[in-house]
Length: 223
Image (cartoon, helix red, strand yellow):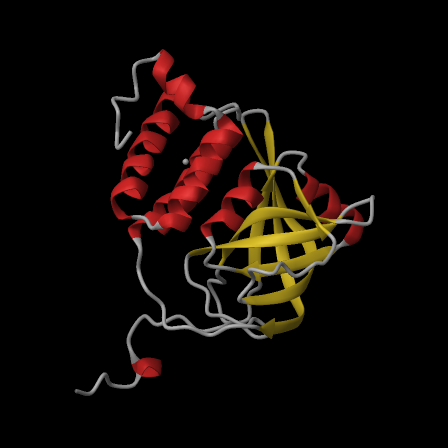
């Protein structure tokens, strides 16, 4: 059975110059940035694929986060790609610091310099757009990609959970999303995805908020 030439398939994304992986739409990543204490802050970062061949990859920071501060003061960081859902949860919803810039769970990484190229306001939150310029990259692991709905639900849940306390977002809508994602993880995820979602529960306490409004109905129990 022939599978054809993958490189010739319509719509297949390519890796921008200097990047170790192909990017399309918004690709979820983890970024480490050096803080004033000499340790690397770990955070989630959505990468916007360039619309034109010579345009840069961009990313956004929301408000006065550690990533914003370190981008501003240090001018860069290390973007990493991982399939470990627990790493995503820790990066998105907790304060995590590391001694080394490249995490043990990273399959590939790229050191970048950053430049602020846009700024807008959403409610009380300042959203900054950064152009990312690759300096050096590396690949640790190559694998055949698989699709797991549980993993996707964990990533989407970290977005919803991270916006619960952000002005301009509807808390009821976010809690509805989290309830749905929790059900998907329970039905479709493996042990790693279930452990990751338990970390979301612990970091945010969203289930208690949903209980107060009658939003959790025992489901297998935002961008």
